Amino acid sequence: MNRFNLCDVIYFVELVQKFKSEVCNQIVTIAPAVASKLTQIGREMAVSVRDVARRAGVSVGTVSNVLNSPDKVSQKTAVVVQKAIDSLGFVRNDAARQLRAGKSRSIGLVVLDIRNPFFAEVSRGAEEAAKDYGLSVLFANSDEDFDRENSLLVLFEEQRVAGILLSPLASDLSEISRIRDRGTPVVLVDRKSRNKTFSSVSVDDVAGGFLAVEHLSQVGKKKIVFAGGPLEIEQIADRLKGAKKAAEAMGIKLELAVTKNLTVLEGRALAAEILSRPKKLRPDGIFAANDLLAIGIMQALVVAPDVSIPNDIALVGYDDISFAGTALISLTSIRQPSLLIGAQAVELLMQETDPMSNFRRRQVVFQPELVVRDSTRPQSPDRAKTFTQRSK
Image (cartoon, rainbow, N blue to C red):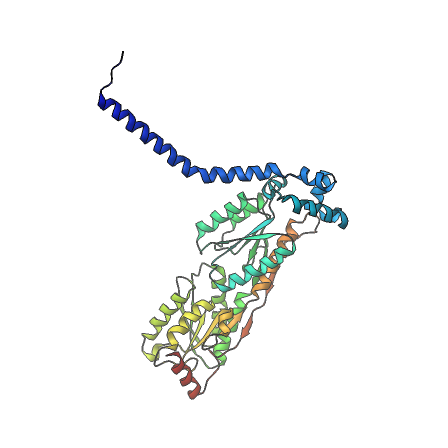
């Protein structure tokens, strides 16, 4: 017969209590998840397509047509089935439907920087157009990072999206071509397909850069800075190309100021560097590669005691975001039709995914527009002084 001393008994009791406590904690931890899953399973088991068909007095195929092909049933039948759906609280399993079909009812949109109002407007245009096709848009932000862009493309491909709209960072589109060749249609946004291997929607950025510098020259500016970067972004490189062409045509000097990115903070930093120069070495005109950069430059210049915009330094941005027209000194900008770009990209994607369409890849190029405002419109000395006083 085994004998236990008092210490053994106490140790055993403590061990049991500890085990009991740990088990209880585990139950408390997993209970909500288990309850949620059981509720989900219960709902799915409680109401099915067969239940809806039985309640409506129609076949399962008729219910399926009401859900997926409403044009195949009469309005009267659709109303009866919808009443049965509402009364039973039926919610169809769209994930299962998409799994069977092999594709989703969503399209992916990858932009360089969703914080940029231009891309926000492009996204809105795409979303509105997609809604007309019964599609939703999954938004993603590459943050101007090559690896992140590729990861997002793979993620969308794995999600079996109906197609991808992409504002690409890289000039090498080989990875994007591989995704397209595996069956996921891709349309380039805000970027022209140079060799016409992709459908694309873009703006003639060379023409936009030319317009900006030409305008600065026409208002009497002779020492102009082009501000923007990284130059690996094709849109920025094209705007610089246009600016150089205009400077050469006008016989004026063009200085290049490459920025790390196109943000307000980067604009302020560039303006601080310009203001640190002796007056005779400062530019009298600045063309910023986007409006956010231009706004940052303006914020720094407008509080400088020895600078008047545009008399001392005129400023042109690019994109014509909504803030450009409402700034303290309204910003002259090169307008891009952002909503149209997003909507047109969806149209091209739908043409590419429609097996009945006589599809051929298209490159849609919109022309930019110069919108002249106070940042380049010559002011009287009194009006310029008023602007300076209001900014302090």
